[in-house]
Each structure stands twice: as structure tokens, then as C-alpha cells.
Amino acid sequence: MSLRALLAEVHPAWHGAGDGGLDPALLRRACDSALGRRLLAAALAAGPASHLLAPSPDGPGALIARWSRARLDALHRDLGVLAYAPAIRAEIGREPVRRLKAALGSSYLLALDRSVWDAKVEPEIQARLAEDLRHALSAADGTTTLLRTFALQGRAELQAWASHRDPALAQWARLLEAPEALPPAHLPEKPVLVVQTHHQNRAVAA
Image 1: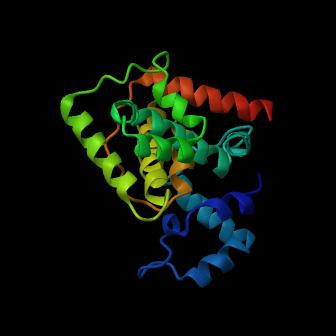
Image 2: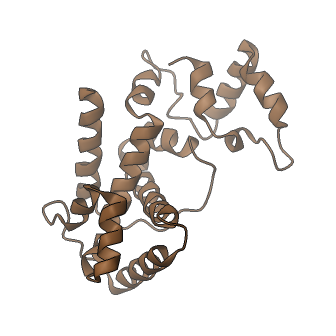
């Protein structure tokens, strides 16, 4: 992947654009300039992309090609669904179950799969997940709040796992979105690895 293509995927907020920072028009001009792109990449390498843009023979191209935005979105969704498994398994109402199945498709089965995770959590985590799920299911915006709830939790789970296991992946996933606070992560390492490996294998086979 070219430096231009990489920078085009990074959320402008990571360059300090907007809110009194770097002028968005100036950022666009920088991305169109070879020197500007090098300066932007150097700033990222010195900060939020220190592992992703660390000098290496292959560079970040292979990782970025493997983990496209769409594939990361799918990974975040599935990790979030799995993280909400304690609440999803406890939800037996006909309408909530129907909405979950309609919104998640085959990912709904992931939350029920005890071979991936037994979904045992502390009572306070169970209560938080149940409350958040009830709120998401009662939202009047269709599936928007529900899917965002799973995506945010999935982002938290990936960051917690990948920051130790694959820091470059953690940074790439973070750079695609605006900086924001994420909910606490609680998935054990093994279930995250199972889901991440599944998505990675699909990317390699594609």
C-alpha cells in the first residue's frame, strides 16, 4: 500500500485536524504532496503509529491489505457480540431475540457457542452488559445503536488483546477511527485469539 493510500484511511483527528488544530484544507494539501505525506507519516511514526510505521523490510502494506476497514469492522462486530454473550444468552424475550438475530445474522450464533467462550463474568460485568443491551435494543433508530454498541465493545476487546499480541494491528485499527473512550474489555485472551484467527484466515484465503 502506498503512503498516500495509508494516510487516506487514517482519521483526520489523528493528524490534529479540526477543533482548533490542523486546518482540514491544509491536511488535504499535505496528503497531496510527497513532502507533506512524509511529514505526516513521520508524526504518526513518532506517536500513535510507532509500531505500525516502524522501519521494516516489508513495511505495513501486508498488514493493512489483510486488515481492510471492512474486515476490521467485521472483526470488531464479532468480538463485541462475543463480549456481550453473557447478556445475549440471558435474553429470552421473543422480540429482543428476533431483533438480535435479524441484526447479527450468523454472528448471533457466535454468542451462543460455548466452545468459543463459556461467557462467565463477574456479576457487575453481567449487570452492565445487560443494561447496555437493553438500552441498545430499546433505541428507536433501528439497529444503529445496537450495532454501534457491539462495535465499540469489540474495538475495546481488540485493543486490549492486540496491544500486547500485535501492536501494529492495534494501532492500525485505532487510527481508522476518531479517538474516543472505549468501554472496559473483559474477554479472556483465548476467545479473542479464536475470533481474530478466524477473520485473519478468511483474509488470507480471499
